[in-house]
Image 1 (cartoon, rainbow, N blue to C red):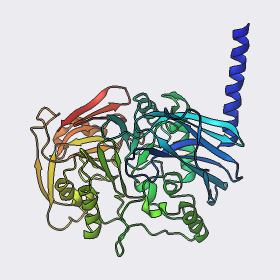
Image 2 (image 1 turned 120 degrees about the vertical axis):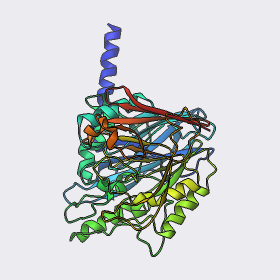
Image 3 (image 1 turned 30 degrees about the horizontal axis):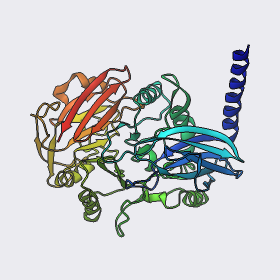
Image 4 (image 1 turned 135 degrees about the vertical axis):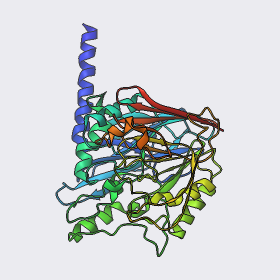
Length: 467
């Protein structure tokens, strides 16, 4: 009888808590890296959540192994978002500080003194700690594949999740985030049918794709560019005068543009390209949309300087449009090839991209651009491949490995080509397009291990690099 009564009380408590959440939040709290590109002895993360337009007395508290009791964070800061066709709402940001590198911690959100949300997460790892991240792109299209991949990624228990662009389809709008992104990656229940509660416990990091930031027409898409409203990432990217570092906002709805600029603040356009450190790796994240000219000497110099400034064991670059791709879809979107010599000079290990909705891996390779672009925009040049490396049996690769990981949920591209290696480009070593998939990458000191997992749960590719 006592056990039955206790169960009823607990059930009522959980019901009350979830009922509070549904009435308190438009989108429940989720974690981001924040404007913290460098590692620190006392780590931090940014916590965001969305509410209706009525301001409320929120507070956030954290408990780590060094805290005897809950420790209050600075007061959360709300930012009003007022986009046409979308009810006015607030995006709150609260920085979680004093975190122990690599350690699990608890956090909670209070409203008027009452707890309305609680979760656990892990602080950013230090350079001496092993870590795991999962990676995919081209994802939030409200498909069965998206939910299966979200659930499978959740089961891998990553330290962070990286999206290689095209975060949400089809136009990066607020309305699309509400329907296709948050319900899947903040699902209350973890299952292949629903997705998983990733956002509250795993920091998400991303590169913007064409569906995220290239459709900046406020006449057609009045609630577009939600990437700059709903994400919080480092603000250390290039702002080079006299170069094209952002798209032009278009459309006749100037009020929508003004409202967007107010809500986005310094994140637009600064958050489109940035760099950060995690563990013993340095990441350079670039906005590869066509309005950016990474062949511009000043912008190219920024990439060179950013990579050269790091002595990290591992150097990774991530952007949306792959320079090296064997699929027919987006084959001529080759403009990021111009940066290959910069990557090679600075000993970049792996370049991650999306855009093409499948998985591809190149041989370790070098590329020297040569001549003018072809009639369709192709970038020609001289290739060299390290075919001795294969799946890692050859030891340290000679050159850069380029990965396309764009099978995170959107419709797949060119699956028939998987069985026709004779149609692949000479640089392609692996091509998987018959199912959605995601990468699981483990960094253990001087060892890099990648497993590409299909939606059927089976491994479709694997390789390692050992330094």
